[in-house]
Image 1 (cartoon, rainbow, N blue to C red):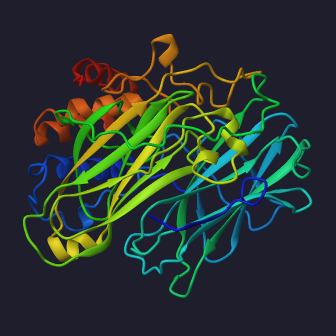
Image 2 (cartoon, one colour; image 1 turned 180 degrees about the vertical axis):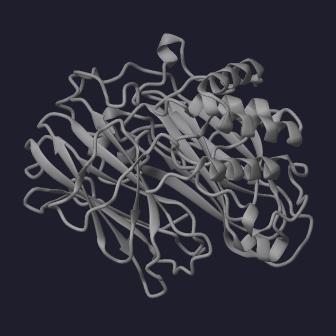
Length: 459
């Protein structure tokens, strides 16, 4: 888990891969997922077999500007793919009103094999037209020094009693590298996801965060694990509900899941890493579990070492999701400000391969949802993208235990169901399905998604 700093008093501050490239990446992921049994090291994956971060395939490619004059405009609801080159700053423009809150997540992906220091990462800030800072957030690759995806966020919020950044006008998202001596200046690919939150009426005047909430750690969830392949990125995160979900992971890989958490509910999560079957030393840190809210802002995380025997990492107890949490002085409460699909990212350090082999390794994700869903704050308008702060639970359309409802990402749940269906058949057939999805017409892709949904198992 990367080290984070930032958020002042305001918040406590391109290239698209070819179809052939995407086929290779997805095919490799399925090969990894089908090898061996959970909890064991089945075969060597090889560095070339580590699945790369899966960018949103509908992302619009844009070029970052090195100053404000030529900054490309970001529109809420559109995902963008860009790059941060060298040690300079990347500028993007936003045109904002004086009522809605604006959030932009930035997922930075260092080049595979890059030599990094623990302080290497990205700083994301939002500035007004005068250059004053509205927010900033910094995230680094952390003690593992592995080149893996890291996500920071920026925001322009309309908050009672705040002076700066409250007016309508032009704002700038600024992304820059943080380097501590070993950075090479190689380009880092970026995925940008801007979101707009409408003003609320329900508790618009409330600024006091409740001090009492259930902070007890619940008993471990006991259930039979269900195979559920994790997604390769935020846009393709696998939708899951309460239950125990099983997959495999290779060192250097990140798996993404999304969980519907409604107003008033609490998220609990634990990840178990299976035994390697050999004692070859100890890796610290080895396994990271990180939770993100619906706008991909980090909520909390846990990190553990690994010595070849089964280990578990659990998120700390998290407060209920409440609109008023945005006035909390610190995280994680401050980030738990929205209902909607929350993300869980599981990362296995590349250094595990050096000690215990290249895997794959069995992982089990245990998810529990506490509390009762409550009514929301009463938004005066719709979010962009639509439905990002909803789960559908109170209307009977929320994700089942198997995860059938979609939240922010239109293709996310459908992609999860397709992965489940393909995971249930042989490797050779899976590759044929994947190749078909990427190479045949849109009609065939739609048909494949329908078949995948029909084959989806329930927990």
